[in-house]
Amino acid sequence: MEIKVLNRQSILDISIQYTGDVQNCFAIAIANGMSVSDFLSSGLTLTIPDELEKNIDVINYYASKKIKPATGATLEQENQLPTLKGIGYMQIGNTFKVS
Image (cartoon, rainbow, N blue to C red; front, side, top):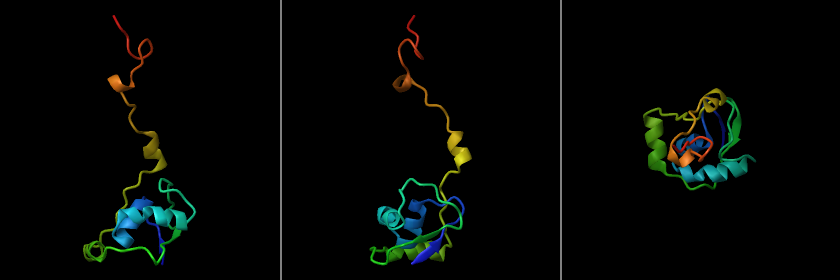
């Protein structure tokens, strides 16, 4: 099956929407020569392998509620992530000063 990617959809979103199981994201990524973490462009055509096991209950639920998940971040949002702070990220003498 071939599908068109919507704005801000990730392979995880595609996997849950069209197969009902997020674990199928790995097979979808391999079938399209990409990584699970790749950013997808809206309008991109992806192939979903027909032999994947599907969870029909989840697929029907998403279809009946007209849910089209789009949880991916844009590149601009990626660059705006807050800087991690706290003891686990501090370095003695650099970002953590001992008095």
